[in-house]
Length: 250
Image (cartoon, rainbow, N blue to C red; front, side, top):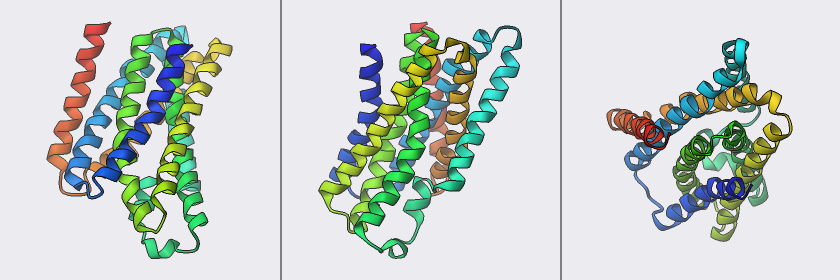
């Protein structure tokens, strides 16, 4: 349990670390953030397949593949529904700031709600990984999610400061979004611990959410500013590093 709690704090704390970097380097280049985000996407892709999808098939027994496919699509559809209800980070950043100058509180709630809702499934994915009993793979999954949280924490700082939110409140918002992932990690862990029968589906569901985030948000974002080639190789590097790590630690 101590490892799960520390992992939850690490996953959530990665967003805060990214926010601190965002304060220090307010004008991070798109190329740099795209490379870092693409590397994180490669790590998450490998973690999703090796740590969630394949174990889901193995734990599912006779109907493992069917359960896994159903879980993957359920996870993807869940995030798709969330996207329809609440715009995600890159849509908020891309929006015209002048369109959202109602009040400071309104802007704060907009960012907290959108980022928080999208971070919860990622936290759950990190927690579900521990349900398989393979701590090494669970830590690799959590590490991949944490890596993704660092550039996300970096890029939310600039737009919030530019929209007139005070630095202290900006940092508090970033910390809250990280706290959501801590809660999500604990929810995922306790869910599969209490009802182990749902483990195969839960693993696949978590894998589906990660695959959706990678394909729908991370890759398009890293290919939107002219750094496609570098981002592609960064993704491959992240993927291969996770493969090698899994073999060495397995």
